[in-house]
Image 1: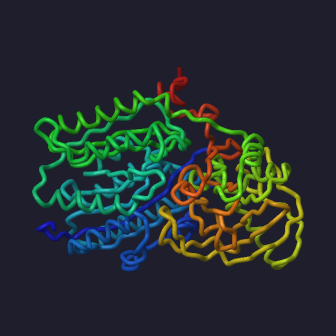
Image 2: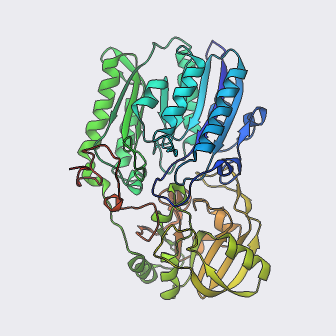
Image 3: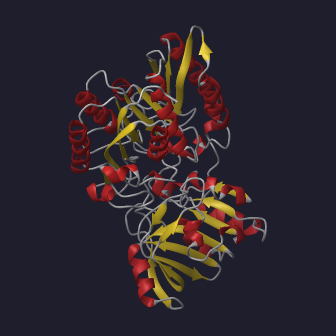
Length: 509
């Protein structure tokens, strides 16, 4: 246990920005609960996250165990979308800075950040937030932060923080663990660890989101190397922390793309750790491309190969992933399931408050004709499915998540309907959320493991809870704003020379 007891300010501001997405994140998006709690400020912040897999929960638990005094600031998150509005960023940032000034003497500041926030007026949201926090606390108070594995790390972020420490798993089952790792790093800073030198390197190609999964190659062996380098003595310096942030590619900003960050006793040790990881990633570049299925081919394959009792064939609707800026309401795969009369199939979770309300008004057991999905513009080429459905179940969308990713979170999907047509079922919710926990279907009475085909609006996080039961996983390129083939995105602001796809064409050349 650390010998020095610290007075630590704790806050967070989480948003993953897809600049190509159709909807922006206003203040209300941060104020309401979704997959995570609503905006927290003051004393409630210190108890709101107990038992959740979220970085701030891990940090608070570890720091409290070490008997530090925790000073709550403000914490909030919003579902990934297009830009954070200027109003939302300025209001939330002002809360945080105001709370820092009110706090009085501080020994350190911890922030739970994503690392890929773009606002209407700043390409680098976290860089600007950290600059303001640094200005408020001065040059001598340590400022540390946890980052998402998909952070678009910038030199400004590294400059204004004493340590940035990213998740090491995707699906992100180590979010709370990462918060605890930041707490341990902060303890070491006050318990005799030499002042840490920094090193950061941006890599020269963008990584598609699905290829960053740490359960499969090429990412699996890269993160094994991260683990091996952490704490390693290189030359005359020990590596205090090392992170690989794969970046969030659907962000049209100069700072977009992967980065390696290291902190060590010496500049030489930090630079060597960064070099070893950067070289390994470069050597694996070609392996970051993977097969994409069309909706028609994926459904046909799944119908032909699904077997009762073997677990579902999972179709990942990655391009409409609400965890990456999609609105969760495109209907490309659903239309194919209905057209091809798929048996024993379910899709979760479709965002359509209007249809959920109509189904609820009709009541369980009713048959209702709906215009389902395709209402938010996430896929302008699509139109709603006009079809008659049986209303099987209506819920309030409130349940406790139990899987490794969302586990411990009290989820709030609003009025939710389970609809059926033939052998196809769909869970329709009033709030958008990435389908990454089996309780999202189970709370409506669907048992995912018993299905032949399961369609999830997710890219990778679903693998934490659905992967162990899946017979096979297919990544589907169906319409949506989280474009899987990055060469199709109309980038204008990337830094010149970065390859838009692994082994692909360089931007601006």
